[in-house]
Image (tube, rainbow, N blue to C red):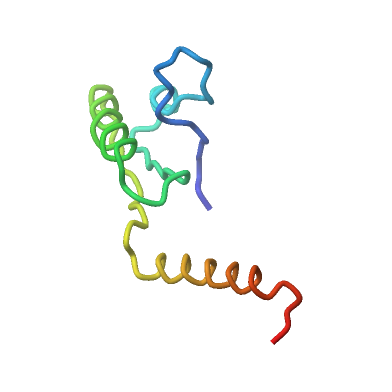
Length: 103
């Protein structure tokens, strides 16, 4: 059981349009926590929004407030993840080519 947790969103659009909330940096700042674990569940592989927004920007933001921030690792090329994706694709292909379940 996690003692305290919050759900927040990262990478607000620069268009000025309303974005999902609460914002991750606001949530970190107002959490009252000294240590924060971020789990970016919307992404399965490292990319700009992970490597910069979390690993650089959020790290600097948290450090300037005396907060330690860590994030969970992305799946990336993990063999288990690739095997799971392959199984889903194979199942979908089988269902698409044999919709009645005929052999």
